[in-house]
Amino acid sequence: MPRPRHLIVTLGCALALGSPTAAAQPLDTAGATACEVRAFAIDRDPKGTNVRSAPRANAPIIGHLVPMIRIDKDEYSGVDFDIVAFKDGWFLIKNGSNDGLKLDATHKDDGRGWISARVVSVQLRVPALRSAPRREAREIAHLVGDNWGPDSVTVSAVHGCQGPYMEVTTTPIGGKAPVRGWSYKPCSNQLTTCDGGITE
Picture 1 (tube, rainbow, N blue to C red):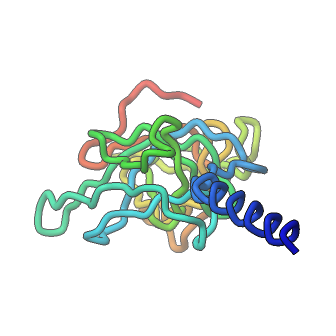
Picture 2: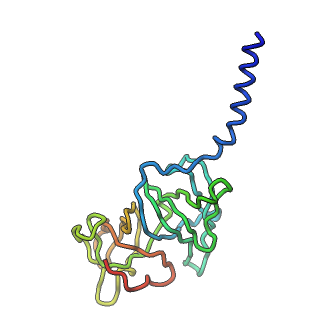
Picture 3: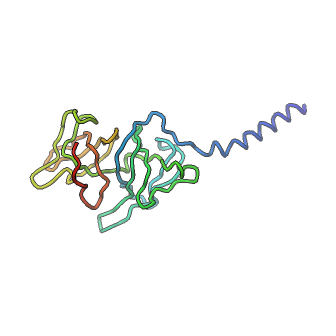
C-alpha cells in the first residue's frame, strides 16, 4: 500500500507544479495569414477591448486596449496598432499607439494578442477596391469622385487581411449598395485624411 500512496502523492505534486505553466496560455498563431496593415479600434466599451491568447471568443484574456477617447460630441478616437496576422474573424495585433495595448506579464515581451474584427476599422487611401488581395485582380469599385477621395467613404466592416491588403465593406459616395473588396495599404488615421503618395 505505501507504494501506490507514494505514487498518488507524486502525481499530485507534479500536477500542482505544472499548473502555473498551463495558466501561461501561450499565444496561438497556428494557421494564421500574415498581414502588414495598420488599423484602429472602434470599440466604445468604457472598459476597453479584450485582447485574447487565441482567435476565438472563449480564449483566455491576456490584456486589453485602453478605452476610446471622446474628442467631441459624436467623435471618438481609439488606439491604433499594427495587424500582423488574421484568422477566423480575428486580428493579431501589436504596437498599440501611446501605450494603449496593455498585456499581462507573460505576454508583454512578445507584444502581440488577438482582437475581434468587429471592433476594428481603417481609412482607405487608394481608389481601387479589388476582387482579391493582389494588384492584378479585377477592380470591382473605384472610390473617387470630383471632390472627394477614397478616404471620404465610410468603412462599415473589415473582414480580413493578407499582406498589405485588407478586405472591407464600404459604400461608395453616390453608390446604391455596399460593396465588399480588397483595399491596398489602408491607414489608421482617424481625425485626418490618410497620407498621400501611396500608389498600388
